[in-house]
Length: 357
Ligand code: SF4
Picture 1 (tube, rainbow, N blue to C red):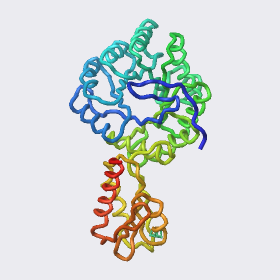
Picture 2: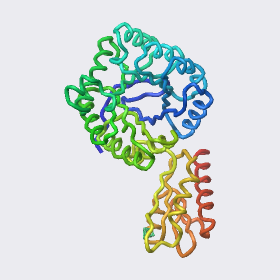
Picture 3: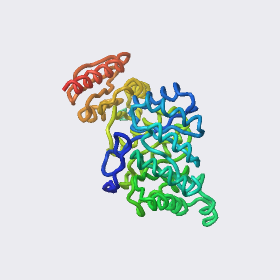
Picture 4: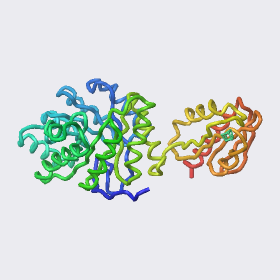
C-alpha cells in the first residue's frame, strides 16, 4: 500500500481529521431532524456501532432549532449539513456543532459567507466543502458538457478559494460521485492540488449488496493509494450498517481495527459441518464485540488447523464435531449443535481477559 498522504490536521470536537490521525468513520442520521428522540436514538445506535462522527441534516430553520437538544444528547462530534441558507448555518453553529458541511459558493452574497466564516472561526468549527457530481454547478456542466472529475475538482477549488480569501483554512473536502470510476479519478486529481484532509465516499452507492461493493472498490482504491482521512459509506439501509461497512473497508486494508475479523472458508465438497450457517451465525452473534480479534470458522481439516493456529479463536469441522482453538491451542471438541454457542463463549471469555488485562 502507498504511504498515507500527509494532510493538515483539522479538529472536529475532540477528534482530529488528517495530519496522520486514524481514519475516522462517519455516518448520517436518516429520519426527520425535527423528530429529536428518533435522531438521538439513531445517534446512540451509531455510537455503539463505533461511529466516530455523525452528521445530521438541517434543511429548515425548524430543523436547525432542534440542534441544541441534539447537541446535548450526542457524545460524538456532531456535523450539521446545510445547503444555501446562511441563517440556518448560523443557527446550528450557535447550537454548538463541531463541523459545518456547506459549500461557500452556494451561500450567496459575500457578506453572508463572511458571517458564516466569522462564526466558524469564533467557535473553532471547520467547514466541509462537499462537491457532488449530481449537483455540480452549471458553470462546470457548461464547460465540460456533463459532470467530470475535472469539473468536480474545479468546483471544489472554487469553494476552497472563497474560504482562503477570508483566511479560513480549517477545511475538509469531499468530492463524491455515484460512479466509482469518476469518484476515484476526482479524488486522485484533488489530492494532487490540496493538502486539506479528504472525506472519502461513493455517494448514493445504493442498496446494501451493490452499495457495499461499490463503496469497497471506490473508497478502498483511494485509501490504498494513501488518500483519505475520513470515510462515509452511503447505503440505502440502516445507518449502523454504513459504519460496519466503513470499518470492514478499513480493516481489510489494515488501517483500523475494531471488533471481530471473521476468517471463514467458502465451504466445498470436503466440508464436514454446516459451514455457511455456522459462519453467518457466528458473525451475527459477535457483532457487539468491539475488541479486535481474529476468529476463524473453517469447514474441514484441510485448511482448518492452519487458520486455527493463526487466529485468536477458531473452530473447524471434523466429521460432525467441531474443534475449538484459542491462541493456536486446541481447547475443546464440540457437537455441531453446540459449536456456535461454544465459540461465542470462548470469544467472550477472551474479550473479558483482554479487557481485564
Ligand atoms: Fe473446503 Fe475444507 Fe477448504 Fe473449507 S477448509 S473450503 S471445507 S477444503
